Amino acid sequence: MAPATVVETKGEDGGDAAPEAEPASPTTKTGPTSSGSKMKQIMCIPATHYMALFILLYVGVEVGIGGWATSFLIAERGGGDSSGYVSAGYFGGLTVGRVVLIPVTAWIGNRLSTHVYTLICIALMVVVWTVKSLVGNAVAYAFVGVFLGPMYPIVMIVILEVMPFELQAGTIGWVASLGQVGSAFMPFVTGAISQHYGVWILQPLMIAIMGFWMICWALVPRKRVQSKP
Image (cartoon, rainbow, N blue to C red; front, side, top):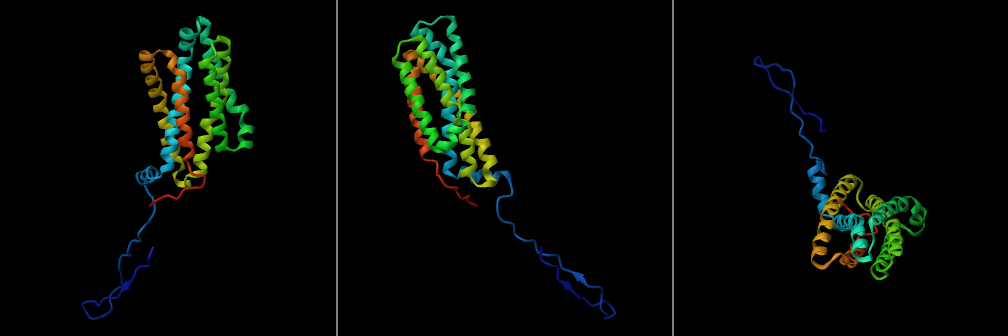
């Protein structure tokens, strides 16, 4: 803060009166000081939108497979009531993958591992699409869950690597909220398309979405971005 300036004034009798202090001029503050300005900066960084779109598609696929796998096996593979256990195996695979693949992800690297896991998931979905075996499809779905599992935490780690420190919390909140949108929107879209074309469309639709999110992930920068004032 700038020091106050003392101004001497004359009293009515000509003597010196008590000095008066001029109010100090306020200093101009720069940089983001409100959540509104931080959010504006977050929205101006393209990497934010690439990662948010990735999570929207990822969570949508994750929930969509878990919700429609049983219907697919019953309608296309002649599965019975026990087909519901396939979803349990799939979601169990998600949990296992987020723990078991931690050292693999650390060895390969966060960015490359996401591409590798996605390619493996695409290959497994092709197996489900083309191999008309109930048991084979159930096993493939479980492994899809395993390799999908680590992707959400990986994105959160990359946010910390890419975004400026003061924008990381807001970016994580924005990306996570888009994930919730995907969890509601993508299964709805899948159901609408399945009603028109049949539930077999689940596999090619999921494969196409996975291919698109690989493009989004490739656009995420490798170096920390600079915030714009």
